[in-house]
Length: 461
Image (tube, rainbow, N blue to C red; front, side):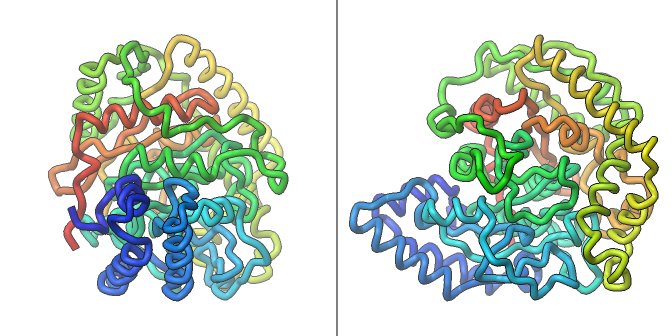
């Protein structure tokens, strides 16, 4: 396999053993970015000099016997809503294209303390909503540049899938870790809300936003999560729940795992190719020893409206310093969503909060009889870029059917590739668990990948 498509953990082993150096790896990835990212537009900022300086430092440390862990000397990148002192943090917004932060986001700081090589900042939608600002680049899907890369962590999905980094950070408010992970054929995780600090991360919706890793394998996801998870005095919402050793917990198999499946909810209205991929994945999980338990998923009637009301209000709050005072500098989609939020009345917002609390309770009851739930990433095949533009002009609630509900509850979800559609575009599926049971989800996902090879497939640039 080409070095750029090696998994994070495999390249880490090669670096630790001395078979390859951090300098060699970083040089190779930077050359690949230079050769191919002009067409994919996954990076908004590339930092070659800083990355090479970090690589030389990592090489010296490892040669001296000081190994920081599996990310040491490995080139990664972060979504451009994570604050960095050494590069602008625009959050996909034209008005912030030159914004410099005074400190690094906690997650960025933890990655650098782990010895990761920071290649740069990754392109994203405006303000982490669903569309890119007209004056900012739109990343392309490396599997087919005519197709959607997934919002809003679009650059994270494209760069990781194209071999421009070994892992990236994304954020997820309604599906924006899971959408690009699925669209680009990757593995990733939206962790429990509060599992990862959001200090230094630009908000879309304070109570719905999640930060998480996007990688090529579930094991790689476990490696990154173990570095960035945990309590943080700079974020009072970061949970003081111990962080397990996710990597050591991957082995042992899933015999006896109870997987909940609501066939009506999962398959009703779902594209046949998407449903087919999920059914094949379920058959594999059964063969691995899991048990499928028929369940009735809580009623989601009103979910899309409740998510929209709550998210729009919190988005309007996040932008009150610049909207409406600089309204003309916003793109139409984000501006329209903020306007929606500014018009939501207290009655509607109260109903959304009541719905959220009742739904969380119903889901918790469901997890008393199963260990995890399974569902698609999205009920439809990945749209073209033009098709997604049309979706954003209308009601996109149906696209959030299997994602937004778990932002409402804050539930952890692991997503991985399950196959391809008839156009050659990846199809992802997800497993959802109880709060702070990321280790179980990672174990299940990793076990699935020990007997499948979808995660080894890579686009040809």
